[in-house]
Length: 47
Image 1 (cartoon, rainbow, N blue to C red):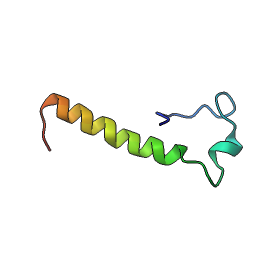
Image 2 (cartoon, rainbow, N blue to C red):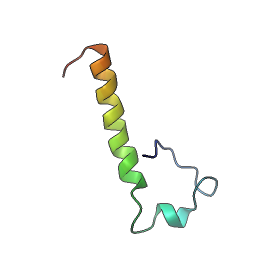
Image 3 (tube, rainbow, N blue to C red):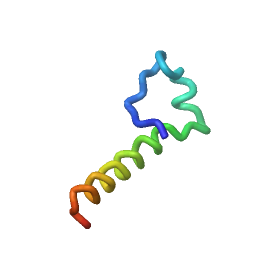
Image 4 (tube, helix red, strand yellow):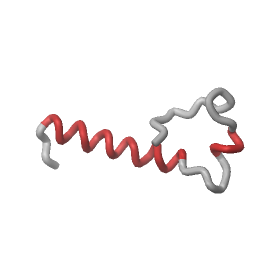
């Protein structure tokens, strides 16, 4: 999974990021939720 932010033109071309088959933006979105859940679990907040 890509953690984001994306460095367009440096680590990946914009055409690849914006392409039909690109899953980078959903990966970034889901990755935020996953990291928040892990941190909450570690902190003992079982919400």
